[in-house]
Amino acid sequence: METVILAVVIALVVILGAGGLVIGSRRSKHKQQQPPAPPSTPKTTTPPAEPRIGDEAEAPRDEPRRTIEEVVLPGPTTAPDAVEEVQAPPVEIERPEPTAGRLIRLRSRLSRSQNSLGKGLLTLLSRERLDEETWEEIEDTLITADVGVVPTQELVERLRTRVRVLGTRTPVELRALLREELVALVDPTLDRTLSTDSHEDSPAVVLVVGVNGTGKTTTTGKLARVLVADGHSVVLGAADTFRAAAADQLQTWGERVGARTVRGPEGGDPASIAFDAVKEGVAEGADAVLIDTAGRLHTKTGLMDELGKVKRVVEKHGPVDEVLLVLDATTGQNGLVQARVFAEVVDITGIVLTKLDGTAKGGIVVAVQRELGVPVKLIGLGEGADDLAPFEPGAFVDALIGE
Image 1 (cartoon, one colour):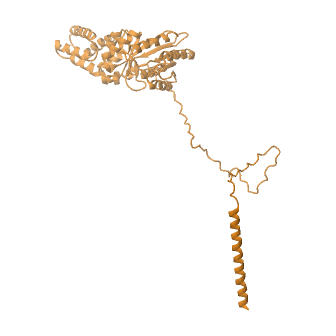
Image 2 (cartoon, rainbow, N blue to C red):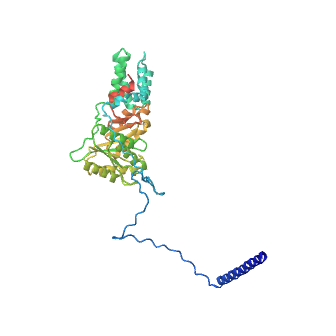
Image 3 (cartoon, one colour):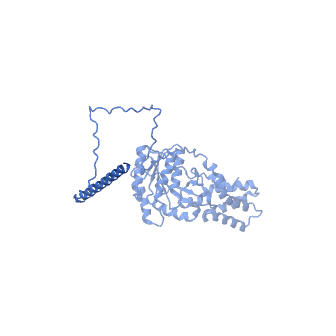
């Protein structure tokens, strides 16, 4: 009996397997006979319609709601290509100290470089016997210090006369004598005041001129500090359009003391910028307008003519009160050549001697005054912002000969 049942089961399995093969073969044949399906098109998803006025709100979900304290807010995100804008810190406006007595405060710095001149003269004058050879050494000392030949001869002649009359020559008497003669040589009678007081309807205008490398732009910025320290309001004109960094440098100086800087495009017309600066000064009611001109080489006739044009254009607003020639004290006699050429183009009213602390040739003060017939009004004694000082003959000579 069991054998019969087993045989029936086997027969059923064989029959069912054969039927599956037949069905599978028919299906495969059906697939082969069907034409190829057309290329599929990308499936698009219709966006849900936006809710309109009157639509029912979505049914509330059964999720537990969080309190506001539990919600964590996302931090600020920055787009990958976004550039974070950095706010520049505000420029702190400085209030320089009043300039009264500034040269006296800087006397030690001046004396470190100039003291050899005064001490050398005192040593020679203190010799027991002042013969011709000694007087020649005194002359050489003065000429080496760039005092100039004619001023040196005048000073030596006066010293010889007074020493002969004096008779005894104690160190105190010699120092007093030398100081008196040097002060007379520097000429304290010259008017060294800066004309920076505004007129009734226009500001005072100051042109700052000079050759490349003398420190004109820095001097203009320091002069702005001098005027602000003395209670003046100032507008700066960046008319040096040939040097890329000049306008930026001048603007930085102005921002430090709250002075506005008028500037133009690089390579622009200097006369136009100078004109606009004075115009801005008139509009603001400023006391003074300082115009930094390009550092023109005195051998370039065209550039020198352009400087004359700047002055003429500015004078359409009113007179130019000061034309300050900036000279590098370390150039010595070459500075006199520059001074002559500039004086032919514009009427120089004053000299600014920079880097006077870096040379032992302080006699250039005397020489340049004699050459131009105008006074040294300001001297630069270092790299610091407040190292520009009004020139005072007595303090200058005291620094030369020491205490």
